Length: 372
Image (cartoon, rainbow, N blue to C red; front, side, top):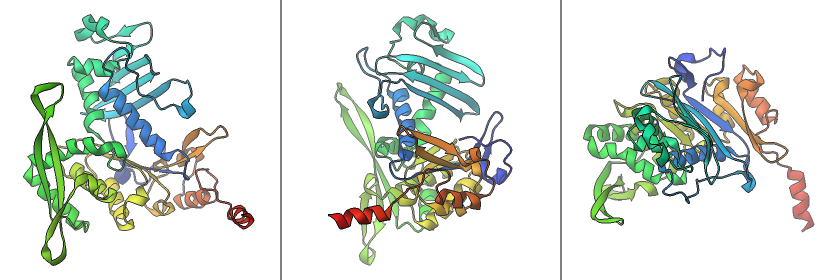
């Protein structure tokens, strides 16, 4: 998420400066239950699936998750930095075909398409007839070794981490491969976890070979990860990574991303931030992202915790989601309300000024219970 124009508070600590765009290092989305907070993160993961997996045939449907099973097209527009280049990717599609799509790199159009025309890089222009109408051009271009398309594809594949979401297991294994390949990094991560009072003595990794169902003569590797804990009388026991608590998984992935010396910025998506982490860990995590973060990583988290508004945050780091009259979730920044004082924002949010708060009628609930 980008910075708001004219805000100077905590510019050094809480923002990422780039040649073409400035972004906040962390952003928090507030809202009541069923307001649609989690759907924002799920939408980003849906876009990721569309980009990474494409389609296998002309009859394969593109993945959609439309509101109330409506017939509207799905539309995404996202801007990100990879290898010091600014990428802007846009796609509009339905289950059957891509309506529009483009990738712009540092202001130059790499490719674009609509239902009538396709503009491809010269290196793959001769392959235009092979592009299916239900195939994302980004997937097609990177599959045919268009370097800038591969860079954009790698951002979706490697730089989006969502350790608190159910779909994150395989992606986490890819990131954790660095622990298997780099013993010094593993030692650094373990030291980091111990400093945060996690009872993890060691992280065991093992690469196993799994037969390829489509080709019995080949196999693919999968990384097994277990965390070794100290139990009673100094005895140790192991827990698989996927069985660890959400808070442990979040902090482990965070440590991995921050401590990799050659690491580029990652996008962390954390759902129910306050549910996943102890308040002291919330404090240190905010310091890590806002004050100590030099990797250009960004955190986007949903939360119910009003106390987060007591931290050193900017108004453009605070967002509210609420459903409108038609039941459609709408997202607004505190910056949109021209608020400058975080303390005033907290009070107004609790009073329901921005929406996104849980409005509970205890009197009505009491009447219903007493009438039963």
